[in-house]
Image 1 (spheres, rainbow, N blue to C red):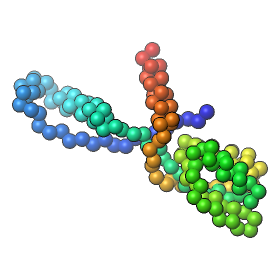
Image 2: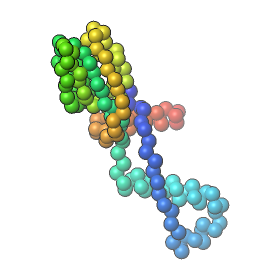
Image 3: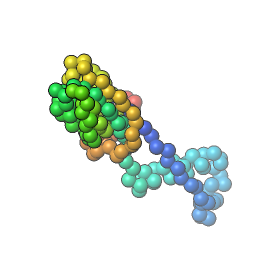
Image 4: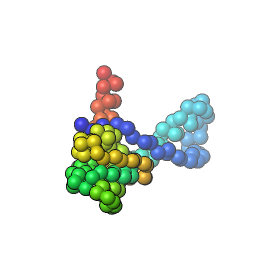
Length: 154
């Protein structure tokens, strides 16, 4: 089973403006620090509810070099990992396959490639960009977080 718990967080920024005159009286009685905490928490809750947040996942650029005879198997494996093949460069009986794949899918790609190519393939991986996670992955992440919260309550 793939692990989807490693999520990169994006900083949320907000600007707090002056309170309406009707709340000015109640704010005077509250210590200043807690007012900012309450206002900040309320702003984040409202922003997340109204802003339709998304979960972003890191996308990696892969360059895989392997003998020609394993090209089909490698491409099939990349397709099962939500990968997108961007090109192939044949050279002296070897193919270099360029693809982009979510990081969560290629955490242990060295073992997979070794198994597919009988140890004859190599790869390099570098960060490409962030992309919105598909609904299936998002639901798994949310369910895992909710289960974790429930576990903490007990």
